[in-house]
Length: 253
Length: 77
Image (cartoon, rainbow over all chains, first blue to last red; front, side, top):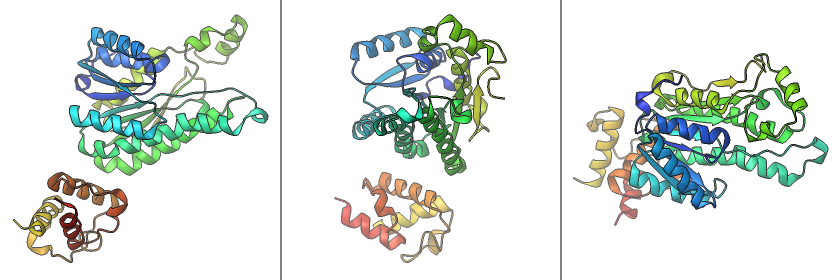
């Protein structure tokens, strides 16, 4: 069902958090579009090389794994600058890496706030800001920020995560406004309940409860999120910027 | 070509203002109506042309053609 976006062929797209979940499906979908995929990894080089091979076999025009942690800003800058110098400008960015720790508000520790906002919001901003000069030199630039419906509607036990994802939306709109005159686009995607390893671990009863709350009656798939991401990265969405799009089966209408 | 002339040519090409109307004391913001994002792009062009890095915090001090020329002169090899 996924269309072929011919402009994604050879497009250099950086995806964070590509090792699993939604990010992993996005890089695979990009590979099928023959994009040049760049992803970062922290420690596990063997797993990164395995993913590189898999993406190449799926059709990626090139795959460039970069070894940096998105919260290590000096290393991130050094690694990306070296990459751009050698390969040319990055014109697609998917800020997907994120962490969560569910807990009641009275149990939230300052360090939990620092780490969740640090990865989900600060690292997204630092990475995107750092690439903004590169974006000014590139063509057909599109940034896709992974937010969450929780950032729109809030959720029990997810106050910090929700705040970080709401922050991503504010950042997305500001970045979009600031750089729209240069045809640099930035949009946010808000997944709802998406079937991942995390939802697999739910009890049958919990699963049924969640499913009842979704008007379309079932969890979404990571492919549902990836197909919107491809559309937003492509020039098929060339006039769409600063937008927040839910992929949630009607959960938050 | 003198460095000042090169700077004026880059500015003229980017702003479409005739080179003859751009002087040493021409101010980017007041005279050429550039905004802060235009200035970032202008400084990026200077960096590419002259191979000199212009730190972001320095950009705000470079208000005129003379300021840029002097900065490039004192920082180029």
